[in-house]
Length: 365
RNA sequence: UGGGGCGUGGCCAAGUGGUAAGGCACCAGUUUUUGGUACUGGCAUUCGCAGGUUCGAAUCCUGCCGCCCCAG
Image 1 (spheres, rainbow, N blue to C red):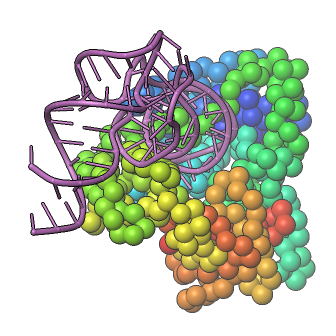
Image 2 (image 1 turned 30 degrees about the vertical axis):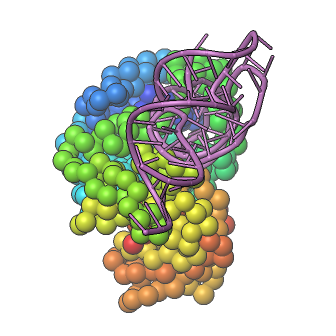
């Protein structure tokens, strides 16, 4: 009997994951990852409640339950990264980093050392064993595929997970076509979390305003806001708080809404436009760095589809290596899109798909 | 101090006798395991101030205050 450690967040999805695997005959151990416990202004940390919900479900399922305390590492790998990125004017995606570093590295390794054969999470994504096209006596490889539920697909957050980690992971929720099916099953099993509201905001931290969060760690000074004509139209309280495409929070009114088109961290200036068609807001080429390929470098002569923010529609694209050979490293990859997309933002990730298969992706420069 | 114009919620702005449109911003909620976007709702008992006319005025009259433009 294989032992699987299930990351239980206290939500429905991971609760059902644990229940399903138990039913399938695994020796299931529930694990609550204690990554963040700090209250923030306007957002008390939900960890205690989440922990209790996870524990409650573990008791209902009669499975072992453990707590892994990763607070220190979460802070180093996710929070520090996030703050550093914001300071440099980028808009990072902490949850992608969390999956890469915490869930599918630290949690995986800790679980394996603790006696696990596999880990599992409640992600809406599928891990499929399929033949490696490139190997001669085609061996099986672990691939990441989009969830059956296209609406909830979470592969966007998972493109940085390694193939090796995938080979030791299970994501049974990816087979569900709708969220309500997951909920119904949870209800049928009588799980305590069946009706718990979906969580939002930064994973583990909760639904904090990014502004309140950053204010805990950086000091800011007011700066100027300029419109598309170069006219000064107002003041902001720190360029770090603003991101491309953003509309609210500028506190400047007039006739039309203002959208952020860019910013200069050094001058502490924010640039905006009232024109939704402004070319600064739309682009059909993206340059990516920090490329990560799950199953190796793909065929650049083919065309793929691409997603540059969570839940955004897929856009057809071709890939071009700008410098050097693109492996899992720092070379630049240019992505040419078939259609323009709005508000491409440095620091955010773009994920590349071949049908339902996730090839990998990179971070927008 | 000759001529002309204007003053409506934080901003822009309809409304010129019948009892305050709309947009932006802001706030709240919805959607969303990042940021952001989008959507829904809320938001002036009151129209620079003071009098007057009228059944009734932000809308007409008078005075005052403030701002802008053209003159000289």
